[in-house]
Image 1 (cartoon, rainbow, N blue to C red):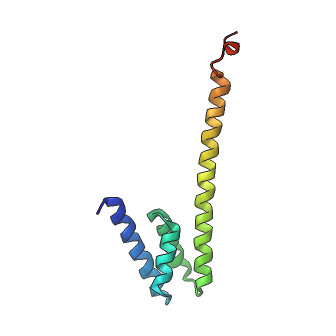
Image 2 (tube, rainbow, N blue to C red):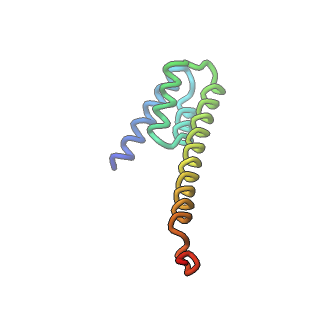
Image 3 (cartoon, one colour):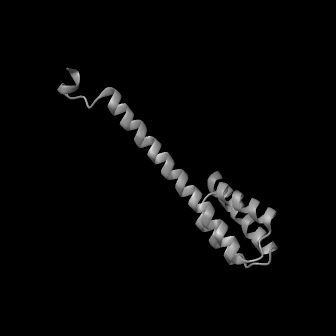
Length: 102
């Protein structure tokens, strides 16, 4: 097993255990881990679980959705920054046409 898979598996197991400690089924933890997708996101979810100790599955799912939304917003921001950098480069260096050289 690669280090990345092992880390993901360890975090998934921790997340499932944290959810079970709160009295919810392990299957909920499995689905939450699958939706979050990364060890860092699972760590963020576990911090929420340990600090807030939610009393309903709805609150847990709501936090998972909020984390997923934050991740999507971060990805969109990075894509926009990359596109903006390429656009600025194009403005600075031009398109490489004869017109630009005049």
